Length: 439
Image (tube, rainbow, N blue to C red):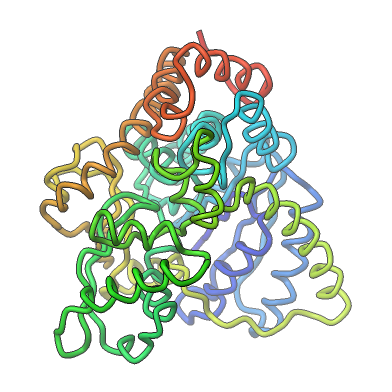
């Protein structure tokens, strides 16, 4: 079996996913093909993973492929392809995504999923992933493509609509959503045996139902404690607790993300909201700098002291591979096109996040039905941007980028149309060769 990792220079994430595979008796004998365009980062990943492989019994084999000229060889014969690329990296592209909008008074927190930052990230990433798909259709047409790169719904949706590659989008937030919520509210005693239903779109999938092991509805107590906590203290999840208050449901991704997925919280005319809801502006650039520094230190320590024992993470990737190979059922929250209306009040061309069964047949999405109307409405404000960004990437028409930005809830609530268009033009110019030519 062959498992190819695209963007293997994402060393920490590659270590988790491939390390998880090395923990599996089903997967550990695989060829692990590492692909990246950065030779130094690729070598760092190889060094770490070879040490892990030795610590795990030296099963399998690691191969490295550097540069686009070797991409097809990395993909050839792959059974599974894991995607974790970041086109343009922190410097220059994330810096551009934040600094250019700031000139127009538009502030962001994360900027990788929605908003003008998410739009630009999708536009520079989709062409690269389209090239991956072309190669895969030639050398591994039956491979399952596991996409971890953001913006999840835009990238996965493009692959699912416009390529022949079997694609599922995977995010970390579904697995930990209810666990983190209950722990934050002092309800740890309700964790064991709980049952839940989560559905919507990536980063805004709704915890629609949560019950304890005896079937009792936990939401009344969650709502009471969340309201009490927001009224009584500053903490890191105030926006999502406001979701519970105003929309009735909690959602999967963090408050710093969700602060910029709507028109409610980051408003230049109401600067007091930033303090009130404890919103960390420019959070993602800060994290990037911290992660780069942390990794340099960690890598040097690992070279000196050796690799620590890897414990299997909560990432879905290795569990999916096991389920497919052994035809053993496993449930995930996956991002797939809404074909057949798994969520009946969202459009079919939207990429939705729903419970999925995984077995030897692959990823099988489950029917959910209609979301509460207010939850579907919130999702649609994001889906509009996702679909228009995909359209821009497909047609190379600049007007669709304008429209995506105009309809983005945060951007449209802060800037007028002429300013939005000028900002988009400036962003396209600043990205240079990282973007195709838009007319």
